[in-house]
Image 1 (tube, rainbow, N blue to C red):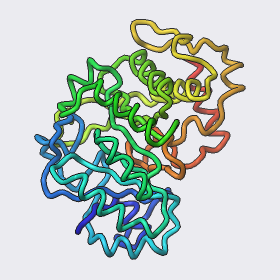
Image 2: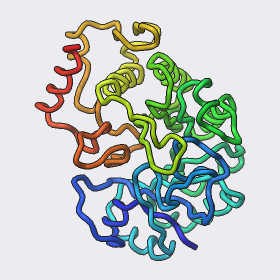
Image 3: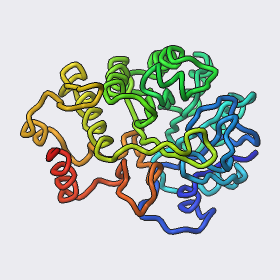
Image 4: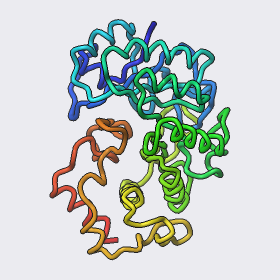
Length: 316
């Protein structure tokens, strides 16, 4: 049986050679399938009609290795957890169970990103080491979802799955994934974030990344400054400092958090701009080239850099 391994994880495991500015702290793996996903998301390289390289997910390469070899390398690794990504294909659930059983003896906590499955399957996943479920709603409004997510699952079905995950795993154990820059307004984006936290889930945000061969290959990625404001919005909502109803928008664009600059500077810290995901996740350079400032910092930015970002944001 084969499994895909993100390039950075493969380097840490000694399966590939390469230099990294930031090493992954989670082992990022993906269920192996020779064909394309049954879904047809406009931004995804694995989509049914995508012409991209099947070894990719976002801008990251995921070469395939023998599952037994990866298992042996993981035994002596120091990763904080395993994150198992999936695409939809006919025998997906069976393959996921084989992978979970193979890794169970290693004792790693496991995060699993998967499309809706039944409650029985969720309980089986939990029994075999899964403690977090990633739910890729991706588009932050039903309007945009219907435009870019040619999926077997509707917008509301995805939200029902979030509720089901919370019901089985507990509060905070579902991580809803949203991609900023797919065509939603900033108001829609933060409203979706608020809905997720009101559902007792958590949120992990990504910046839209255009990849050659996808339907959205010519779409422009979001302005990093606007993305930073979304990160602040997530931080304020998650920590119950403010709700989206208190934010101010002008034609869907965020103009005010409802807090003074002094109040914001008091409550924010460097973690606001870091990768926000399951414990031990830093997801280095998933959205951007290492030569550029990351949308999501894989390590805590220096205080000087943090203050510089805030200074640039609040000058506008």
